[in-house]
Image 1 (tube, helix red, strand yellow):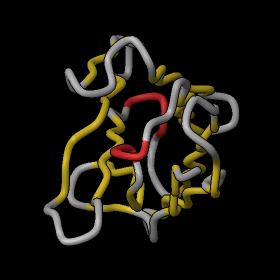
Image 2: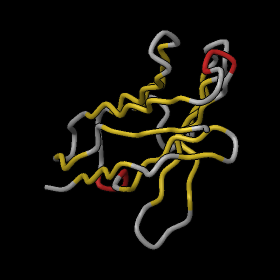
Image 3: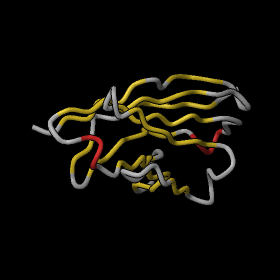
Length: 111
């Protein structure tokens, strides 16, 4: 079955960086478009970034220029490099493929 497992979250100070990973199985990864989304406390799910099967990338205006999405087809893994983190980036981050998503990884940005 389709599985997506996020990792790499943590507690960091403003201005720091984190790299999230989404390791997948159960489908043909190289053909898949993968999305990152996040949910902040008491808020709805917010789309963050997308990478298509050909490597084309898309970003929400709120993260463009600070976050970088990439993929490693050999490892069936998508990464989200997050730089210049700010308190408003605090959320649970999920990777998604179609209707499937992982359990999420918590990112907390606080001084």
